[in-house]
Image (cartoon, rainbow, N blue to C red; front, side):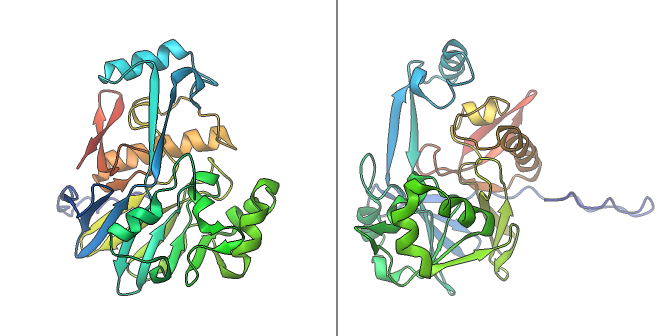
Length: 293
């Protein structure tokens, strides 16, 4: 977001209040966490997770394993393994039932359908799906055996991301299944007036989008894969990750977004952070830290 213009020298600017942290409460199932954004209710839905040796993690392709392990241990985490959660976000709104990303659709995760059921939502109830990007752990749940999993949903993704996905032969089966239901938007477009805006965060993929949900005075930014790990990506934002298609752009976007979030106090929803991934960013020395709400 651009910075607000400074007030004239003779004017006295009102201080900008720091947003209150987003409140989270457990729902009927441990696979579903409910949280509030203003008057809107959101749900974090477990799809699964990956645990891998640090040496096999996407960060180890460019950084020494010893440095990654040391950073994890400094945060009181095991230094030999790394875990990433997968949890799509659901919102029930006057404009429909909105789902943000769809998980893997099967092993090694694939629990989204169980989580949706616990949230009292059937696949037919979902009216809009907003895709951050087209990596398999975000779009694998869109189709199964050539058929749509969410038959009544319009699938939204940025025009550059849809072009990127169609060019990926490994995604051909999903592309064929969803083509008639995809609506593209230009990066940064307002998608639901007053409620949902796409935020251009390309770099991880050519059309990667984050999504800002706004309700009254509060907002939350769904960050997709702008950041992957709640310690490594946040406290060491300059470190590379193997899956970025444009690494310099992704790194610059991540660093700029962290600075913006630390200044604004805006809540985030982080798909790969520890479940439920709802929190905010604070400055810590010359870097940043993620605080779970």
